[in-house]
Image (cartoon, rainbow, N blue to C red; front, side, top):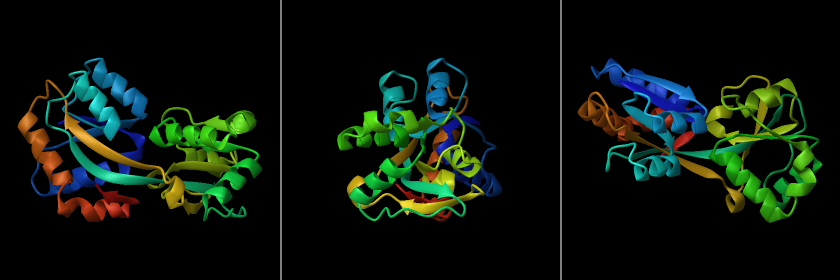
Length: 225
């Protein structure tokens, strides 16, 4: 089987795919790219059996007829966190006002092209600071982790899915955003129209959504959906 996913879930999907195969499941190869790119490739009709993306992106593919109706499965919930370079002073992010102050004080702020980045830009607009900080915002190139930009010093602080930050060297994770402004993303999967073996693909998704998969999700900074 062949799948495509956004970068945010690549580690956990690799772990779950290995566990599936270890218990006798069909071989599966999941390519991880930028989420926008992944959706476009499915829309273009590239041959995939499975697609793993943010829930709303799967809904759009389903509405456009690119995935099998009723095959969508919610897999995991991922929270957005803030990171700074290793050794840097960690800002207070315990409240919404504290996060806003940290963003205003930062010489540069990194964010992703994915759902967390979209939500973050809307938050800056709601705060009324979008135009003020626009020259200091750095959007990661598709497929480039925000954490790597933080580690290299390209940005002074960065926001991304916790799952994408926990394995990056050279950064400190300050923590997840406070509840008032939490940016949580549900990642889902579906069987692509024209899948070579739709039944096998659905069996894999059932395994990935099962309680058996919960430990791997938590180990990668996510929660079962």
